[in-house]
Length: 147
Image (cartoon, rainbow, N blue to C red; front, side, top):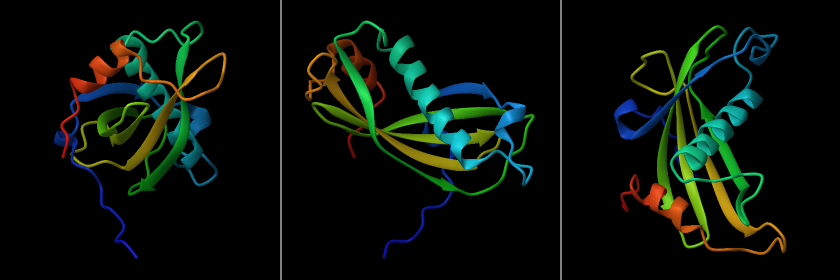
């Protein structure tokens, strides 16, 4: 059995997006509910794809579908909070990419949540696997360091 990972360091991420938590994100326990973090991951990754990779989600012939996601939670955060979401590329394949998303409260040095998120690219019309579009691959490659 593998050891549970610890919080991520802020300096391990090259790209960040700020996101304002919402009142509705809190749960009965008074902290942001786990399901909200998955929406945060999706928002940060898609913002990158749109702004940096030129993705046009409603019209592009090739789009990325989430095929896997997971999260590790380390410390609670509550509304209101400005979160900082860091993106890191864990794996870049020909037809898929795996992201790591670190969620940081305000200016915290360590993540309160760290998630992974895998996109598989598909042809919108056929639903079949497709190569990552060139503009998206180039944007991702700028921030990917094989390790």
